[in-house]
Amino acid sequence: MSSDPNPWSADETHARLTKTKRIFGLMFSSLRVSVLLRVSVLLRVSVLALLLALLAGCATAPAPTTEWQSHRDALASVDSYTARGKVAFIAPSTRFSANLYWRHSPAQSQLRLTNFLGTTLLSLTMNAQGATVIDDQGKTYQDPNPARLMAYLTGAPLPVDALAPWLIGLPRAQDTFLLGPDNRVATLKGAQGWDIDYQDYSADTQPALPTRITLTKGQQTIKLMISDWTLDND
Image 1 (cartoon, one colour):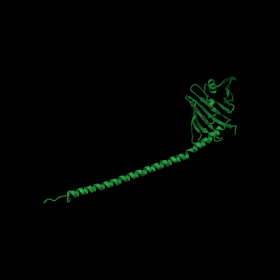
Image 2: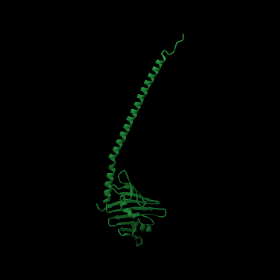
Image 3: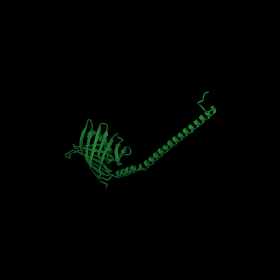
Image 4: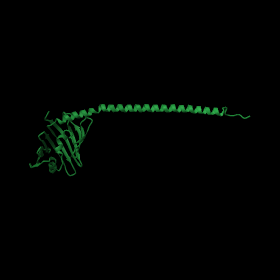
């Protein structure tokens, strides 16, 4: 007499298999729902964190702009000033250094370069009519374009027509610039192709004014070191 290893009938076996599949199906469905819920929660938390970060950024962004606006307004109010220091011009064909005296007012600007003995090498006066230069021999030269006249006499295309705002760290409307962490101009790209790097500012003036400036254009470099500022409209 043979024994059947399966004590259940075919119908019972089918019913049990169907029930088992249903149980496993419910288990996998529950697991899938649980995973989806966790992913949904993580996504919501991530989105919420991103929104909070954006809101925090929006809340703090105006502060540097406000500080820069206040500093720029203070610079714009400086209409008369005097700067003393040193200038060095470096180019492949020209290289010289001199003591620098720069005097600016609404009516005119004056630039005087002297050697270490105090002898005047060049004196430039600019006003609405143009530029006048007196060289170390006492000869007088005039031109409606100050930069062109300086380039002709010195071989150095000094951006003297833009020096008044640039020297105090004030960009013009056509210039592009980046601010440093102190909300002062750190770098400036001028419309004439000059790149300006403001390396240091004085803590003794109000507003703070540059003390070390480097201007570059191609292979030409101008280094300015201002040792004394006088604001005549204080």
